[in-house]
Image 1 (cartoon, rainbow, N blue to C red):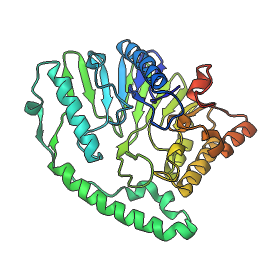
Image 2 (cartoon, rainbow, N blue to C red; image 1 turned 180 degrees about the vertical axis):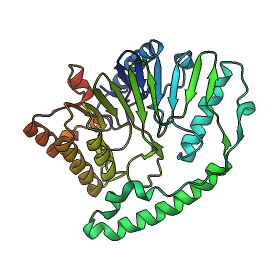
Image 3 (cartoon, rainbow, N blue to C red; image 1 turned 45 degrees about the vertical axis):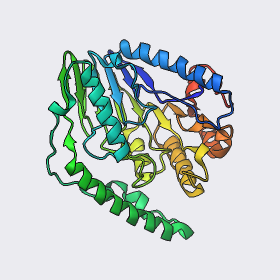
Image 4 (tube, rainbow, N blue to C red; image 1 turned 90 degrees about the vertical axis):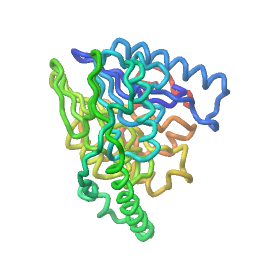
Length: 333
């Protein structure tokens, strides 16, 4: 729909907005600057409107296309499920989280520095047990390079652990009807709706420097929806297996960022994402898969993921972009 966003409104007996953010599409996108601004503003107005009417707002991570920063009134009197800013977070997102919490607290005349506390010196185990399938995959000629990436990733993770222990702890909040919780690995029941949240997941490949996200699972009256946030495909096989085991009725699956092919995405990881999407379509029994977010940011997104679209058609699975779900054609159709 012409802007970077995965903002999603889910209606059960409550209203839930997941990732209420939007950003202007990148410079190389085939449209004028005026159209890009128009699409962003249209989306922003709709997101703000729906957030003001929502009961629950979910922020899976602190990239700017996943949360609104310049109209903090949308968070008043809401139950907020927000990415834990104290752990499983890279430096840039920690900085964004600090700024966001500081400005949010200022709205209630509360000094951010006064709510901080010393972080517990807890231990953070390497998440290797959570990516066993990915680690066992045969990478062929790429195996040595993959081994090097994992080894460097482990070193980077060890450095992050030291930083997490040094950060002053940002607490969960409860202020004037607004409540902010850090939900990773937890479940909550509100009325007849159950919300579950995964443990932190890599934003893309194993030990991605971009950081971590969490996925959201919503169950209501026997139906299940999963919103994957930014797992980029998924590229990691274990995440595909998790989705399959969950057996969602509706899956909002962020695809691989094909517009970054040759830069932030190589062909090996693109092929992994394609294989994983096909496996999900084949085995998850999802009735509807919205395959979007990173995908329609370039004209050849269908060509680059053609095997997925063809397989879904063969299987009779309803696979579409967000704009198609809304009855529109993608801007780059």
